[in-house]
Amino acid sequence: MTILEVTMAKATLYYVHDPMCSWCWGYRPTWDMLQQQLQQEFAEQLAVTYLVGGLAPDSAEPMPEAMQQMLEQTWQRIHQQLGTQFNHDFWRNSKPRRSTYPACRATLVARQYGQEQAMVNAIQHAYYLHAQNPSDVEVLSTLAGALGMNAEQFKLQLLSEQTEQQLHKEIHFARKLPIQGFPSLVLVANNHAYPITLDYQHWQTSLADIKAVLAKV
Image 1 (cartoon, one colour):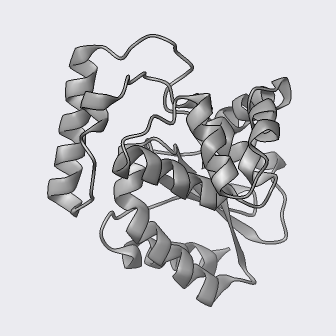
Image 2 (cartoon, one colour; image 1 turned 90 degrees about the vertical axis):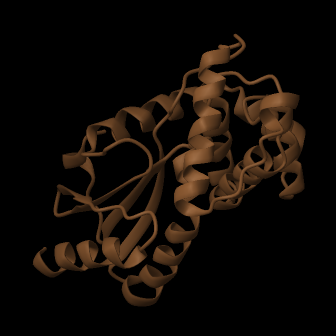
């Protein structure tokens, strides 16, 4: 799918993210506020759609020690800048892998049940607050069960070829958008993609950009 093939009655704001992206977790409170405001002001004019961008492909290899240290330092920096809470026990008690595609697939399966945002929230809380590893299928299926889905059926869908194809199609589409890493916001209207300024602390910055684009399309 290309941008030009996206034809919708509404303009679409794409939120391009990865459930295991630490900056996405840091942005979460501001994003929630922005979504609420958009729902109040533009519910009839603007659709909001999540896109998984795929931060790190599947891997069974343990994460190198240097990368673990770098990522833990990133968590510390996000906490210092944004006040975001992290449970650093993850780095001592878990077996980290550089693999976020399983978590991305989990959000795609949850989307079919109307639980996409709930699954993203569950993955982020499990990972960042409860030191669980969303790279593991068992963790993801347990989260699905807690959200009311059938855990075994969820696992089958998570590992299916159909979900794999959907993931790669979505990653391909996301990377054609004018994004600047994760998270990113892109507004598509009249077959044109407009990058939206993302401010980690002030949702009003993005709202102003969105209003400016909608006023001219």
